[in-house]
Image (cartoon, rainbow, N blue to C red; front, side, top):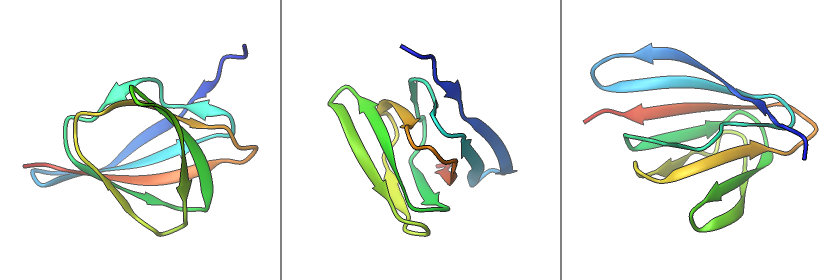
Length: 96
């Protein structure tokens, strides 16, 4: 099995209300397993299908450019870009 490269997270805004991150997934890359400590919103910058691994198994996440989605904190998961093209997401974590 080929080892996947890692995505790149660049923090763009950090204050007492939100943390905004630029997530860059080169083709055939992954986040590795992680858990979000805060609720968050993802904004896809292009259409893509990403593979989501969690304790519930593996599911495809169909993303549409500019169509945001929300997730609650606490779910442990790994995100994989299995595409032959790069994918960029904007992640907005909500601080309470």
